[in-house]
Every structure is written in structure tokens, then in C-alpha cells.
Amino acid sequence: MGNWFTMPHLASQHGAALDRTNDIVHLLMLVLFVGWGVFFVYTLWRFRASRNPVADYKGVTSHTSTWLEGAVALVEAILLVGFSIPLWADRVSGFPSPADATRVRVVAQQFAWNIHYPGPDGVFGRTDVKLVDEQSNPLGLDRSDPAAKDDVTTINQLHLPAGKPVLVQLTSKDVIHSLALWEMRVKQDAIPGTMTPVWFVPTVTTEEMRQRTGNPEFAYEIGCAQLCGLGHYRMKGYVTIDTPADFQKWMDEREAELAASSTTNQDSVWK
Image (cartoon, rainbow, N blue to C red; front, side, top):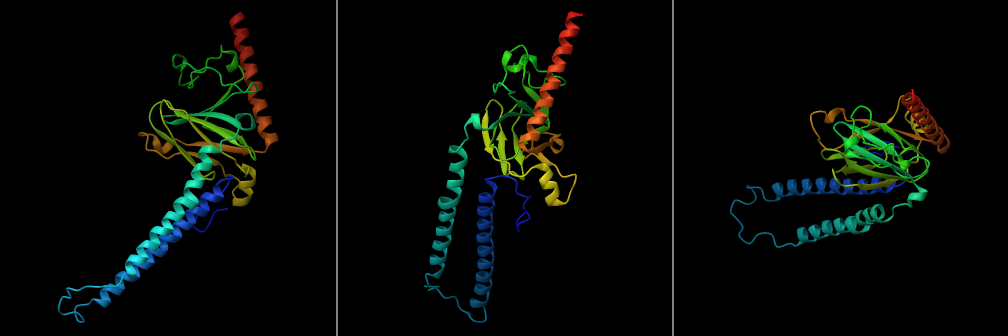
């Protein structure tokens, strides 16, 4: 559910901890805003000209402000050491085993998201920049590679099963992009020449979220959170979170389409 800061509806396992930290940070900001505002008004009244017609060169000798500044610094240290660093450590050191996760490559480009699944063999096929065709093969997947024959690719359509870790290998073909999955509380830059791993566990299927929001047209979106060119505004994809059974059904259908396409191509070659 969305929280009192009107955050997007939560749909990932780790998102609750992020939202809680975000709430605490904003609460501290609110306290500081009100506190400094009250202090400012107090100083205007306390040191008004009618009460202080002559400058006081001795000044204020109280150490109250020093203690308050120390308290703010202490709270900030607690937020950093007690919340932020453990959250960060969990994301960078707690990666799931590839064997236990749904693995997928996401390759960003101006202005689309290319999705690559390894297929039933669990091995990503070889890619070659010489084979890139923006219409038929934007990833440059080499179908002559045995590992690539069962690989499934899509554009702007990412399907994932709920309740299972997702391990994304993120990169870019051209400029820096940024993968943003708002409901999953995921945002990571996609950098050319660098494969960045990202992981999360989706917990709410698309159908369940449609029921929660009362919106039968609801869809999880893939956004680009980095200005990447004139078409940045239209670089949008979609994530469908399925039940494990529905995800496997979708994958089987893609594999069947791939097999049929391969057979058709072989027939055309023989003719």
C-alpha cells in the first residue's frame, strides 16, 4: 500500500525497510523545519530593536544551540549507521544464488528496454555487436550459438514471477540510463560497458495490484530516471508480475513461438 507520503504502492520484499527509513528521514526534516522556524521567530522577538536599542557586545552565553546541533548530528548518525548502511549492505552482499533466482538481462538504449532471458538451459547466449539489427535483433544475439537457441527476448515487456528473487544484469548500449521500478523500490543506473547486478523479490502480482488499486488497467512501469536524450520522455516499458504458474506458462508460450519461428526459417532455407 502507499504510505502517508503518497509513495507508490509497495510490491517488493525489501521495500518496507526503505519506506520506513524514508519516513524517519522526512520526520526529522519536519522537526528541523518547524524547530528552526520557531527559533527564527523567537530570535526576531527576543532581539527586537525596541528591547535592544544598544548593541550588546557580550552576546548570548547559553550553550543550548550547541546541544541542539549535537542532538541533530546524533540523530543523523543513527540514521546513517543504524538504517542506511545496513540497508545498503543487504543489497550489495545478500545477492541470491543464480540457481534460486529468475535471471534476466536488461539492456537499455535510446529509447527502449531490451529484455533477455537465458531460456530453459539457464545460459545466456552469445551476443555480437556485428549482429545488431535495431528492427529484428537489437541485442545482437547469435542464434548459431547453442546456448542462444532457447533464449527469449522482448522489448519493453518484462515478465517476472512473484515470490521469487529476481537477478537483473543491467547495462546500456549507448548512454547512461537509469532503471526505475517505482513499486519495487528499485532504481539503478545502466552504464555502457558495465554490467550492474540488481536484485529484488516481487511480492504482488499485477492482477492483485489491480484489485488493490481498483484500477483494472493498472500496469507496473519501467521508467528511465536519467535524462538520456530527446526521447527520454517516451522511454517506458512494462513489468508483468505473474504467479509462478502463469510465468512458466508465458515462458513456455515464448519458447513455442521461438521453436516455430526456427522451424519456419529452416524450411525457407531448404526451399
